[in-house]
Image (cartoon, helix red, strand yellow):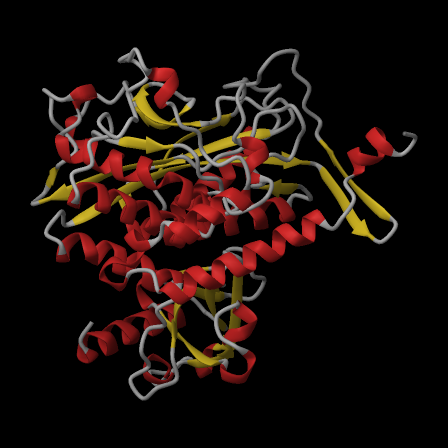
Length: 461
């Protein structure tokens, strides 16, 4: 944005904040692994110089830079300014861009917000589309209590829920749906932040599993909204004395929670995934996009399913995706083509493996880059062996391929297959190496600790 326009925007934001009695300004940013951080300053310190100078912070504490070279700055993104409903004093909250401390305050290439903007720009630079549109499904559990510990001589967890169902709780009605009023309140708060919501309901999990489905927005907007959704749900639960978790598999032998991502591309105002004559109404561009995602899905899992717990969800029998294939209405496939879409303006695919332990910026940008690779190289998913599940092939058993079974396997895949992420400089290679290093250390931390079930199996052996 030109400096003159930026100053005008700042003056308007400050004027509106003054009229609303704002006392503090809060800057929010995600660290490398997807955890939210914030910094608050008195409103009188919120002057125009902050747009050029920024607020200094220690980037190494966000997982970005080494301690000996960790000075960075946060520059507020005025377009995201909103009143924070969870602060006692009137507070204006907004996202901040992570910048370097050079004289130009250059955008930091490893910041998630920089990466999603670069991925969206790659669509335009390669003349593939003008933008991508995304609609996430937020699945999560609400517990009335959660207690856990892992010490030298103790390892335990306990979660409790007031809900009890004989069979699955999909679309359960109140009074059995205990948290419908909670979801109402959460959705209204999301709408106050400008997050479009399609609907909400109880999910399959019988001990408090919920779903809130959002509606379409472009990639950078959707990624920001995803961070806000987690912020809203976590803070609202805290306000009500509840616990919310986005863990993919918090309960043994119960439904897991995913973060399904509906998506399509638009060029010249037209959905270029739509073709009434194509398979499931999809164009060749859409099929090539599918081919790219499926080809790179093992590597994608390192970003879309970045926890050891993620792979306890990706197992057969719980409507979770396990196979690298696609098809109409198939919830076991990695990519589902929704059959209920009647409006060609919203012809789309749904990528089902992701879960919300991810950084939404890195997850969505990586998926888009895989799709871009498929379109650029015209990867035919059927020719690549990823047959539609509703178009049986005689060699189906020989061609079926599965998603990674562990985080370790996903990181191995990313280490050997990440060139597609580097196109147009979208993902810095240094970030990929750092990501693998961080995640390997998480695996090691898990592997070194006895599991409670190991005591059941082996203590008296």
